[in-house]
Amino acid sequence: MEWIYLTVAIISEVVATLSLKYSSTHNSSIATVITAVGYLISFTLVWFAVKKIDISIAYAIWAGVGISLVSIASWLIFKEVMSFQKVLFIAMIVVGVAGLKYID
Image 1: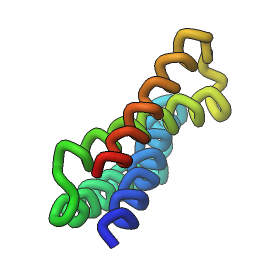
Image 2: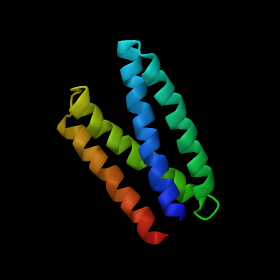
Image 3: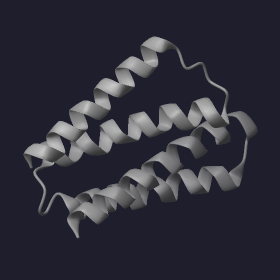
Image 4: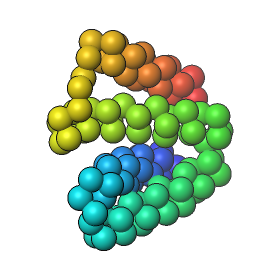
């Protein structure tokens, strides 16, 4: 169950971060509320996840997968630049996260 908590926490964090970007460029009250609720859900679920998963593993996965997904989504949604270097380092994050999951 703890891995489900962590997965939903990551999704909530990504939605909140993308809403933060949208809110900052469109002055949207709804996006601001989505940001706050998304982060609240995310941190709450990480709190549940770390009851069974080492914090060093859970936080690294939460942050690494979150960064990777936000980078890809911001490229698709907000048309941010996705350079070769960015792709390379995102891939390195994904490999690191997979390694952490493997050792746990």
